[in-house]
Image (tube, rainbow, N blue to C red; front, side):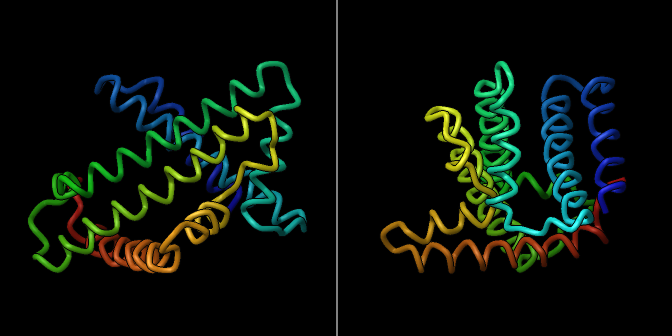
Length: 187
């Protein structure tokens, strides 16, 4: 998995630098490169026998980055990129922009699943990004967290159980949509 994610990181980084599709495509590819790099690092740590929660892994990575000159700025930048990706997913779901990725309309139920899924995924990613920005702002790597920390933060809010239920249903809906997308995606 680590090698596969590293390969995806390299591919997306090359796309970010070499694409001729404009700044939006570069940002999208760069964001994916960052995400795949984090997944590659996480998978490599797991392969080394260091299993832990995504929050702990995020805190370790954040601490390593913040120990270098300009590390707080880098952590804040990572957080802002993740927030941006989250906002993009919310927008793509809310406006049904994901339908442009498909050859034809998959039906109302799948459209509803895609819409809910993209919004829920975007909300979860945005919370992760905010946790990274907060960690950089306070110079405290322990404030960074992965998806589990984002969901825990969401659960601690008023109506947290209801919010978690909606996000969980949304992520499940995104999974349903992803299966359909695999069949009808534009090539």
